[in-house]
Length: 236
Image (cartoon, rainbow, N blue to C red; front, top):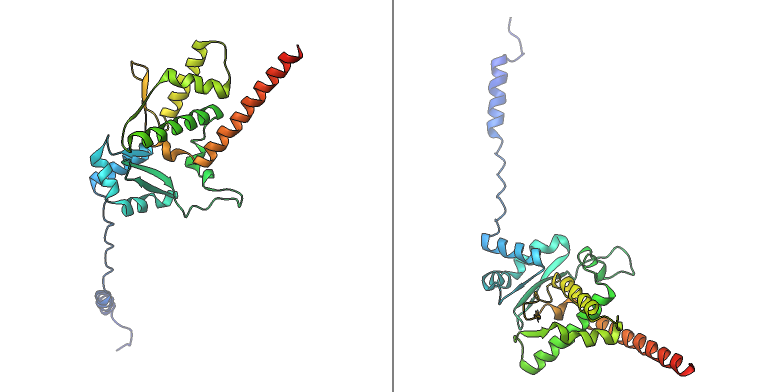
């Protein structure tokens, strides 16, 4: 007896036909891989926070010729690359699009910057070295290596921090400060002749207005201390 129910084989055939009519989903094209040379340059940039043309010219060239792509790689971290062509320097900075959590915060609250905060004594030495660097640049021109002898800084630190009464202790304090700043890429190692090089990154590490305010405040403190000592001596 005939029936309207389709045969099971007809159902399979129909299903197969319908399936064949469905267009295949196109495969997603893989994102273009970052070239090996640029990848190495960005890794080096993030490792140290900066790249100097004089030290690694090939990696520096990779960064300067691909700044848009480097910025795209750094964008998720609210970072960007900044280039100082005059001094042959590339370094990581805070992106202009960075949005702090609070209304009273600014780019100085970025996690990268918070980890790099300096102590008062480190900031003081940074300000002194920055002033020395800029003065030498004005005298000798951009790109000229700026070298100092460690002992030449002792009198300047003593003006602001006072004397401990021990030359050995003061020199040890200065050497510790230089070692701390070396980690920020602003000075080189101290060599066997007790000299070191101030690196170009010092120009960009801190806001110059903040450094000038710091120096002025320290001058006021040292002046008040000297006046107090003089007053006490007169009373005696």
